[in-house]
Length: 116
Length: 408
Image 1 (cartoon, rainbow over the protein chains, first blue to last red):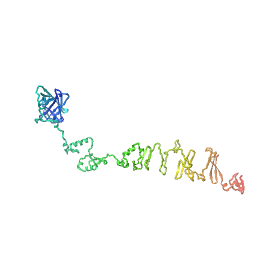
Image 2: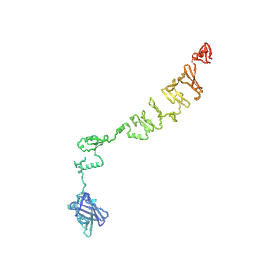
Image 3: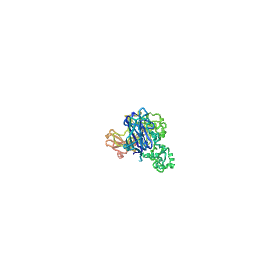
Image 4: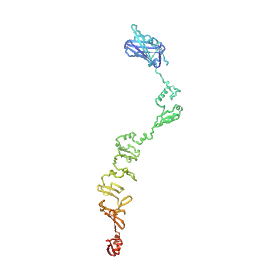
């Protein structure tokens, strides 16, 4: 178990390197949530109820930020899910199953409150 | 198409209080594209409803700011106001209470709850302009000692009273302008200015309103040549009224103090002297000068006297009165001041004798006895011996009865 302490003002910076150019996708979506409370979802195309994914340092990279106000409410095992949408359709070109976020050692990440 | 997602980087950055998460998706071809919702866990099951930015409103402190905390040792009793109060003090300001009037401050201080809020040094700032501000000494409000004393200055209304037809700014502008000489509207300047309504141009002082002149108190110094285009009158009527020079120099000098009256002179004999030492309604007496004559003009039948101190040496009486010379003096007639032999003179010795100046023996007079001859005629003696005994000398005449004789 990998425990990450979430304190006041902690932000989550998410980077998503894609296989192809961003422009070849109609949309890319990602969700982060825990098993204890609410989660956050992102979208490259602006959508109501979604945080915005932005182009990163390369044309095939997306970045998103969980604000401190959002991470402050996230506790428990961290899960993620991703879906990509084909251009011109509403069909998914690919979609993952919800899966735990693991660190480089394969440990499941758990978010807990920083008591300091 | 199935997407596998892998966390390729999970990094905690304590100094930034941030977590960096890199997610690498891998699209596996050959799989069936699934037409479904974009994300499985969209919160539809109610177990994990997504949160959005709208789910996290800003903190509303409006109610919190109204909560009073009596334990606060600040004047303000709410947290927000107390913070502001402390901030104000930290920035260097004293705590001050602002009132519209002095009366409002007094009324406020009558309330014990208000006084309880005060600390030594608190300021009472009063918006009213004509009253000072105050400070709290722990017992009572005292007048701030630092203030500007304006008692010697005119107020705006007082200036407007002094200059009723013009505002003070206009008067100031008139004074500053170089066009002062163009002011002709006498109503623009009030006669209420004490006794003086004049305008000035350089060193000239002109009468501006009839009856109002410039008044200069004593002690003024005029440097350089002053030009008076009209009479100069000295109003003092007694004592010494005019001094020229500092009266401190004595002795001979190449530049004695002088009065220059130019080269004009009267065209009427015996009148209009250049220096009038006496003048009344009809007479003007004094000295007149022309290129060829020095006139001494006196009033007939005045005497003309010459004094040495308190001694009248010579006086010339009016017409037919003759010339009087002091008893001890004489009259000398000389052709030369250095040759006494060319001098003749005459003076009175006594009732019987006049003396003739002896030009050979300087300073000596010789008696000339005339009285007995003049008053009694030729003296009578009995004979020659009697005549000699009577003081006659050889050659003088005497008579014996009707007989005229010569002393021998």
